[in-house]
Length: 117
Image (tube, rainbow, N blue to C red):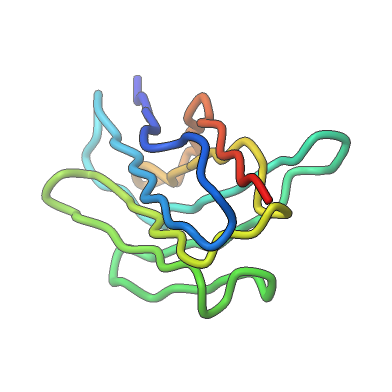
């Protein structure tokens, strides 16, 4: 069993910054790609970005240049640094991880990010 727990969400004014964390725990032998997703009210969940175990990252066009994903493999933790936040970034942010040889996918419970104008 693997658990992912996000933290760091909250309320911030437009132009501000937040840093989200997602820590994995449990029966972990290896963690592959870890990703951040978000879902705004009335919208489908979308990929924010992801990072491979080797550190290669990809980002959604809407966050390029503003958000940065990093990870600490020793701590089984992935981070999302969000700068220059906009009201349209308001959403529930969730992380996921590919775990083990068969890359089973696990999800965190999500954390709310609200950006006020």
